[in-house]
View 1 (cartoon, rainbow, N blue to C red):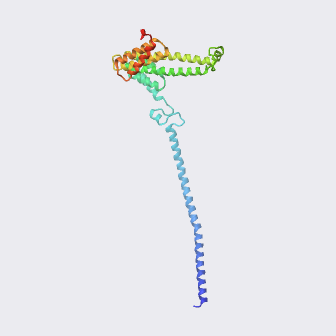
View 2 (view 1 turned 180 degrees about the vertical axis):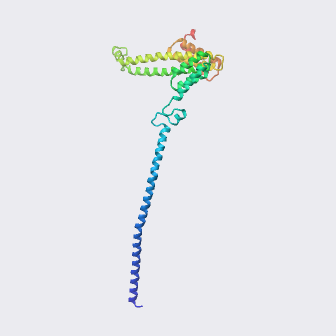
View 3 (view 1 turned 90 degrees about the horizontal axis):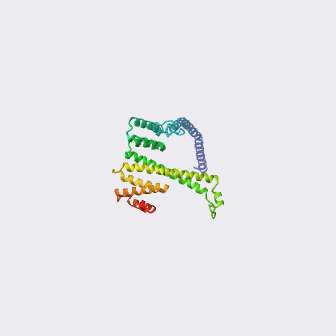
Length: 304
């Protein structure tokens, strides 16, 4: 073969290869749009399905939220499932306690000697924070059975709690009065200016509030003391006497710190001594002896 023929043949081959490559590229370029169209159609189908499912999803979520609002009582004043279980649905909170109170009242009317019903009824009143009704209920029970230790113990506990509450109120009243009645440093409170500074209407009103609160505190502790005296007397000779005497000594000591009456101090001394006689090595024996020493220090020898 001549050189010219070889060169011409190579050129033909090269052109054929180039044409084949261009055809492949054109074919690929034509194929790409088809794939894009296929993907676009699939995407449209996917989102169409998603919209259909989302619609039902929103319906389901609405139902869930609706049930949740009912179940948990959102915005209704109800406490939800708990109210349903207690029969308090649709804002009927407290109706269960009220119905139990009415039930116990009927039981007492039918059988006035059932002390446990009185105690249960007093507990229901306590749930409603109606201490006055709880005390009246137990006082009524005590008139039926004056020596029932369980009733008297519950009654004494209520009186003691009331006394502590009133003492806290008196402390707050005193703090308010003292804060408003402070005279400037170096100024005699009994001087004309000092009296003027503490005689304004606000100071006088706070002083009156404190005086009233202090008087209520003394009355409350005296009632508590009497309640424990009744309990100690009823439990005499029983296993409950030890604890009753210890509690009587404690409340009588506190009453003495409020009233300053010698009779209260003497009552506390007698109760602690009785406790030590019954339980000389009890867990409160050391405290009882220390309290006796403190009370004896403030009482004349003839009254110890």
